[in-house]
Length: 102
Image 1 (spheres, helix red, strand yellow):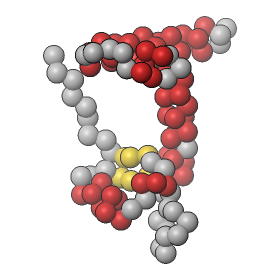
Image 2 (cartoon, helix red, strand yellow):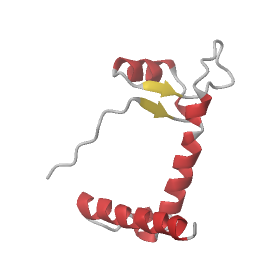
Image 3 (cartoon, helix red, strand yellow):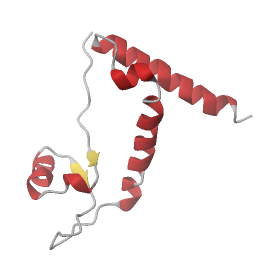
């Protein structure tokens, strides 16, 4: 069974990806760039900062997942076993927050 990814509607990125060619390429593919402008940009384009705040949540989630050595070093040889272990690690993180809410 092949795993296919849906085309993203937006891309959350940091200032390092702020470039005219990169933004144009994203827009040509129908992807909205949500990237804050670099400080040296002459005409800054301001992103939707409400949506940009989600980037922090995503970064924290990846940091928690990489606390598992098996994910950080990618010991698994196949993409399926790696994705399966990411699912297990995600469930483990989710259960911790879910159980403690009582």
